[in-house]
Amino acid sequence: MTVADALTAIDAWPGRDRAVAVVDRGGTLASRGATEQRFALASVTKPLVAYAVLVAVEEGSLDLDAPTDPGTSVRHLLAHASGLAPDDETSIAPPASRRIYSNADFEVLGRTLQAATGLPIATYLREAVLDPLAMVNTALDGSPASGAVSTTVDLGRFAAELLESRLIDPATLADATSVQFPSLDGVLPGFGRQSPNDWGLGFEIRDEKHPHWTGARNSPRTFGHFGRTGTFLWVDPVAGVACVCVTDAGFGPWAQAAWPALSDSVLEAAAR
Image (cartoon, rainbow, N blue to C red; front, side, top):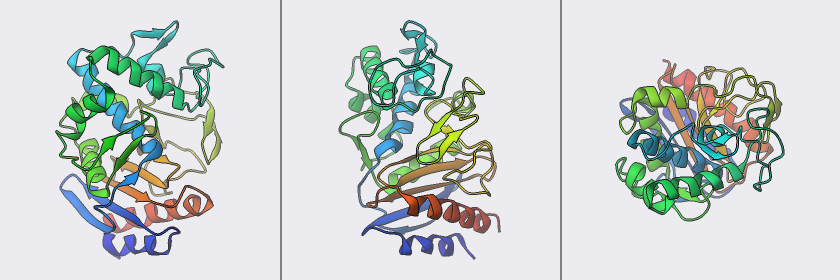
């Protein structure tokens, strides 16, 4: 079975339109579906915004550990360790005590980034990340937590950057894809309580989580994100392979079964 063969599994997925691509450090290995069509990314917006934050850190506009509120920093916000509630800016736990997946964290990050750079967040994201990666069909038009649209082609370019960074120092990417505030428990949306629920800086880290939206063949170092619109992006640095997917079918039980199966097939085929 080739990688292209593995991708035929998406033909049976729900919804009308979908697309998937697999890339390695040399480029696209295979793709299938409506690869040039724009889809809403939902929470796959977060890794894009996180990457813009990392660029701003390297430029000196932001400091990961500078306080944003008493006891809370940019690092806490990126790692879902701020203690903010999932969907509003109410503090419900001390910082670094629980992993609370929070859209509010990224709302605060968006304001923080805008204040630090003097640019609207959509503009800074465009100039710092999207234009340099030629992601011409990607845009942020709404919340920094969930408001981006993109194509499989563009997300594949971002995934290639995550396999071999050019926009930020490799050491910065290594930090961003390493566990921040280890041993924090929390709920991974759609997959229940995880102990620990490990995250990097804007990226969820697979580690030994079970159940999970990636496959059993994905290494513990796999990192990425998924969204409620049926989108996902994962990068497995051990395998040297990344997979991106966009759909018009919302996340649900179908994805809980289909995504790990696709991931395992892709990794099996890529290893041949």
